[in-house]
Image (cartoon, rainbow, N blue to C red; front, side, top):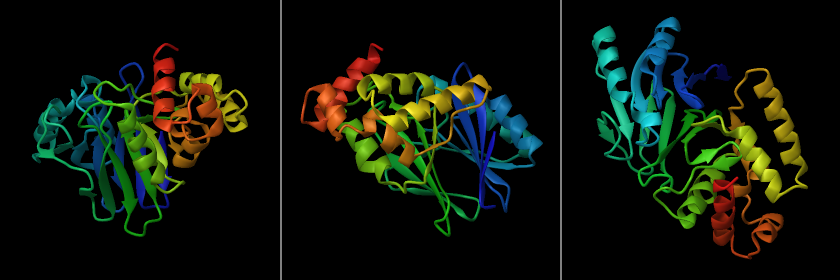
Length: 268
């Protein structure tokens, strides 16, 4: 699947493992690209060659094997194919084959026109990074969220706290332009939205989004990308300051609501 952004950038969506997504972020003018979480390196390389692209870097969201374990093999294969070294970015020294450790606010270039801002979103893992992409005109926006933000949901708090996830979702990602396209790490959307309806059964936007997601999956299509606006309208983890979500969690505290509904989702 290909998403084009006004002839400036493309995002190629690639399935991996059972329910993972990998991505190729492409600057159209130069055909330079970065791979996001390339856990199946052969598939990435085949796609790069098929589309006549030049792979410059890997953007790793976090160190878990289903996101980072293909890095070393891809770097080796790309070196053999092109003679060029692959730069592998990540926010955690546990990332496989890491060459460049990034920090919050750091900006990476892909080609000449694409700026990739690193957003530290610790919680799922302590070193989790989301990658926010904009072009030089600021007209195109996309964010690769790994296992921090899913469409309709969020990642488990393996190495963090409800406070950290609240900051990641509402203090960071939720402040991106509302039209920003969201590319997450897994195809969990239908189940996430079904859970969301247990929190907000009267949310009509959520009801419609679930219907649309089920239709896409029935046709064998991915539900990505969503948008930040979609998440603010339908994702219970980004709606913990809303009255209905607070009432469901039996609290007036959004942080406590985050804890409660994450605990419920873990058992869903």
